[in-house]
Image 1 (cartoon, rainbow, N blue to C red):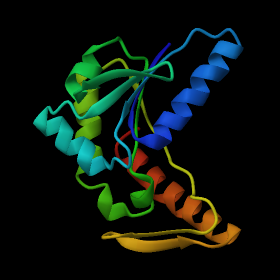
Image 2: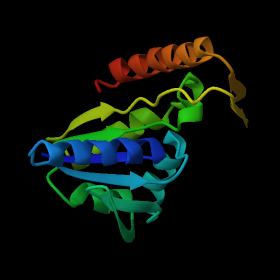
Image 3: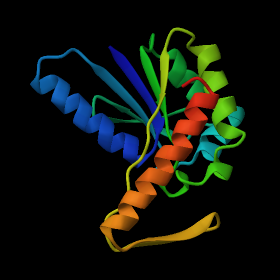
Length: 166
């Protein structure tokens, strides 16, 4: 199975663990991650339009010391699964998904019509996390804050996935 993630450091973490778990269990699995730290759907969308080789290419949890653009990455393999991801700090904010998710998913479907597309939901930050972004400030001071952040993200992601058949 060939899996491509169009993501950020959260997909980097997930891809690394997935690859190591597969190897440890004798499962043949090729993982590829397109990584820009903190990358939002808007940045993926801009990269899709510009063709810029802005992504660090990582394969099977290894940095390939190569930058790549989205179109070339989609053409690298016959992908079985492709995941897309929002920046974690925007994940619970629906206004940060439009029009980016719809256009990005349509582009991926056009380039890789046989791939299954999934949305990679991020998880809550650690306790004590404080961030200030133009889209809104947020703090993670308690376990309840973590749960609320995760639930809000789940609701937003679910709505956009259903609307985009992902």
